[in-house]
Length: 139
Image (cartoon, rainbow, N blue to C red; front, side, top):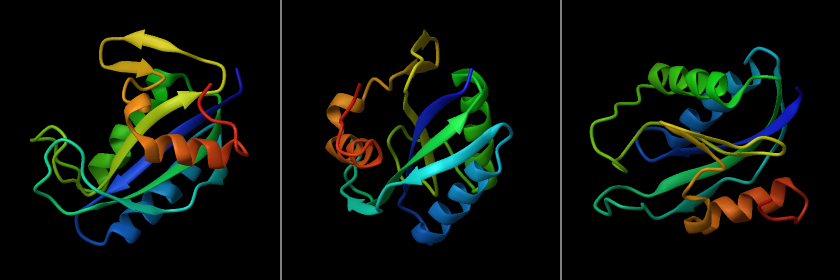
């Protein structure tokens, strides 16, 4: 099935713009996928652990035939290649890639919920999603 996945990108360590750029390139190179659009980049305050640098955030609309689980595995691989270390929840990171939602699919499984359970709590995700959908917010 061809669907559109909305992927949130975030970085608050090192060269944040370079991390986002490499992640966008890696997303564009995923099998059976192509980037349809990207939102503006915005700087946001950290969530959770507040004693860390601000984030640069962006969202990508990705047309794909990958399932949510297949896409998650590939996103985690991109994070590892960008030096992502998972040692503190909501801590600083070189890159964070989250599946925010799909246009046509939902999923509730251990380790993966689509739409993302934090969507309602992240104004910047809702703004970016609306930008990519031409003004229409979350489904």
